[in-house]
Length: 289
Image (tube, rainbow, N blue to C red; front, side, top):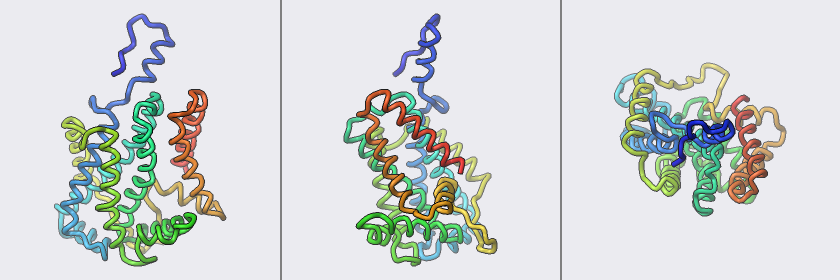
């Protein structure tokens, strides 16, 4: 635990203490809040599985929205806790790098955390694909294209994660509800050394998630409008694909980001600081697209 800046300390000392002070929500760390959001989202999904038809996700969700208010609220809770988990995870990573905590985990734990980044991305995107509406179908085509560009194993990887090209979402459902969820949970639990975020974190996430679930219900794209858009975290990739005639470079850019994250804990302080600055600038530019 970091000691507070002493009264009468010099300005540089106070500035250093401020930089090292962790960001918290209601005395809950960002990491604990992210873990609580993930656990609530995963547990909530168990209640939705029996009522969800992976062969026609759009029809299942439409029936919930029109005739099953309880299922609609549970679906909304699942949606908002998932997005809360992603946002809190990004903030937790940024806060940890800002405070120089990347050397705290063991080398093996850190590398597994880095390897878990693309799994989290797939977990979020596969959940979006299960909507089965026009936006989801467009996102699936883009993801199939990107996975197909992976050297050597591209087509096999696309079939493993997404099933037959243009087919039903059964394979996506299995990977989302079981495989990817368990992998992410295991990686996070190993890092946090707990299976959930704690009582205070669960209360915070539950109250915030329930308020959003009761007040805001994400709809479906009915296909009547030509404009289709992916989730907010996918829009930057869509824009980059529109601008690029060689999509494979995006895979190499993603691999480079993972390599830099894996390298930062063993880098010299100045080199690591420059790498963190570059990652922060790149993330800000991506979100601005």
